[in-house]
Amino acid sequence: MFVTAAYAQSTTTEGAETHDAAAGEVHTETGVAQEGGHGSGVFPPFDSSTFASQLLWLAITFGLFYLLMSKVVMPRIGGILETRNDTIARDLDDASRSKAEADAAIAAYEQELAAAKAKGNAIASEAREAAKTKAAADRTAVEASLNNKISAAEARIADIKTKALADVGAIAEETAAAVVEQLIGGKASKAEIASAVKATAK
Amino acid sequence: MAGDKVDPVHQFVVNKIVPIEIGGIDFSFTNASLFMVATLAVATCFLYFTTSTRSLVPGRMQSVSEISYEFIASMLREGAGSHGMKFFPMVFSLFMFILTANMLGMVPYFFTVTSQIIVTFALALFVIGTVVFYGFYKHGLGFLNVFVPSGVPGILLPLVIAIEVISFLSRPISLSVRLFANMLAGHITLKVFAGFVASLGTLGALGIGGAILPLIMTVALTGLEFLVSFLQAYVFAVLTCMYLNDAVHPGGH
Image (cartoon, rainbow over all chains, first blue to last red; front, side):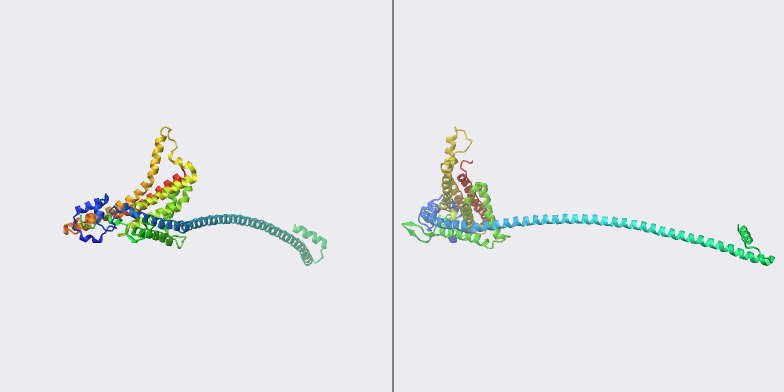
């Protein structure tokens, strides 16, 4: 690009070179004509003898480049980008759909949980009520049976008591009769003894 | 000056490699042709092989190709609207070709294709020719609206039209000269400064010390030239988009 192999031969000073550079820029012919790479002696980019060749080769290379770009490379890159955008869009759709599904599942789960809780509470309170009523019923039944037993026992006691009292009267009469017999040696009438015993018992 | 072999213009000389002559006209395969072919090969191979895997998740090189593609696509869409997208292959080819040619020119000893006025002028004419052809093909005489800006008072119209016509006619010249002159001037400047380094280096110790300055300059200029290489390809593509906008929407400015 800017290195010249033959530079070592140079004996010029910096100043001469600056002049040479300036000469190149204003395309003075002297600096260029010494090169020998081209004989026309004009500033190379303006050398019209090369124009036809450059135009032809530019047309060939750029034309081919244009064809390759428009037929091969650009559809390919466009395809890559499109595929990627599609994939991203599809993935985003999938993600949002999954999220909606998850949300629905969470909502359903919470609903079920709430229902189950309510059901549990209902069952618990029902059981509590049932247990309460059952306990109350049991208690009343037990109380009733106990009362029955108590009254039966009282009846029995009263019965036994009257029986015992009756027995006591009979025993007392017999004892009194026996005592009377022993004491006075005569027999007291049964009625007399009974009335006497009764009077005493009172 | 005699015997001075450091000629900053020598790098632009077109040498015949394979002489070809058809009908008395010289169509030789020259070093310029060689580097046109090299540009074609390098750019095509790069774009072709970096995208050959068609990866969903691009690698570094595939990203470069995709970024160039999207860069030009958005440039054209902004410049000429969605109707201008039919010129996408043309703008993309122009940008990649000029960019590759400029970058290849930065390699020492390589010929810079775009430093030849005929090459840049041909590319500019191709652009303007496309604009004119498509403009008349699509809009007929309505394409001439491009010379009549809307909202101009009638008394100024002849003057404005004259200015518009001149500016339109100067487009291929400005388009081609901008690219050509930038590449030419950059390469000459680089060569001059690099020449200082070498010539000062032959002057002994003091000279070697003094050569440091132009050496730094050369390094800095090399960086600048890479920037210019890209920038000029970009400017060429942007202006192409703007001119194509005229063909797609005449009278739209």
